[in-house]
Length: 492
Image (tube, rainbow, N blue to C red; front, side, top):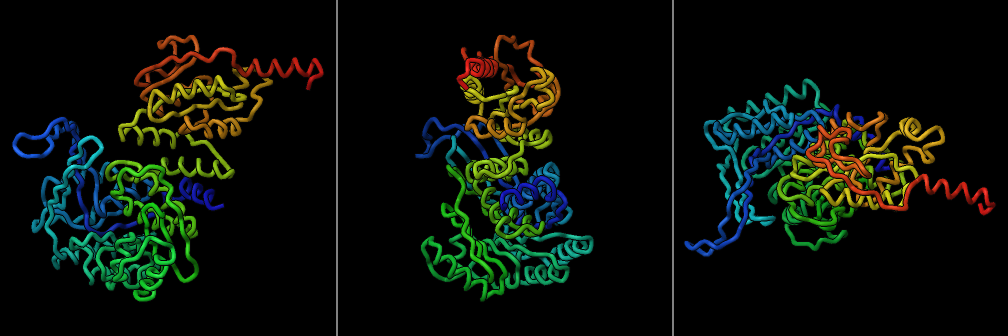
């Protein structure tokens, strides 16, 4: 099954991949603020800045996506010898990206895009950049860097072209031919209408606008029109796989053997910034990891759905995507497994880093009933994400007796995960969830019943503790007793 192959790949294999990203590296800076009045000096809104955030942009965002998938990532490009380069280096180091291929140049500035955001609305963008082809010494340095990586073993290369100068015609052709001498696939994220410099690449990932520009015509976002343009480009430039990202229509893959259309997955779209970078990273990772192309497209499409639901440039994290895929498998009636402790800790950290409140609660949840659901819904209403720690069968038996649980741990986990209010489920076998809570570090720890906050296990590892009353008249014990009574009376 496609989904199950992808989850196994993400859980077990993707960490072993070595991928180089080459292209136009940028720094994206976001100045977030509040808008409450119009300036008396000119008819423009006054934005009171409350938060400044810097993230990796351009080709560096592709690298960030791969790094957050836990791939081993090597970044090649050029940046100035300035303060913004120092910010870039800091961000790459934090992401675990090897930036030894980021050439320091005293001939140019680091490309930086500054965005002013009022509430959820982008109000202004300022670009600081100096474009131009690589200087001869920079060209030689970048080639030597990549050749050394290939000698030491690479699984794939992404060329991320933003038409700022790194991806010249000669350089792109050298990368493609050199990589193929090592049997290493090359994916191009293109720019411009002339794809001659991308001739012979393994994958190319234009959006619909870029596909139309390359085709020299304007076509509607319809399957037949997209396939026609993609086939023509594939033949003209000897490209093995053309993958067109199509906004609300998802994406389409065209090659000699097949045509695949993957519908969009996002329910709400807030910002398409960086979605193309995400697709490039996911697709190349899948191909480099020897996933079937249909599975690689499926994975890239799910990841893009996560990205466009966020504001600003956002790299997808492996555990976040794994959770999404596990939920999708469950909806399709396929195999399901809860996240392990490392995955849930990483997912919680991802959510918290994005400024989203993480809520944690735990229990046995043996024979899920209305009381359970009401309690979980109340817990979810306290924050953005609800994680449920679920007692294993062995720990339930210690707590409830030899006859319990009535429902196995994986079955209980799957039922809980199916609830809209539950974002993730994780098993624990200890008598208390203290060690698990220490891993997750939730913003809010929720307990039900007559507990006092100072009595709740694991409270020292949570931001705060909230006590929620259980719904009267509902309990698993009550359900069991009713069944026993009906059996005794011959009604069952």
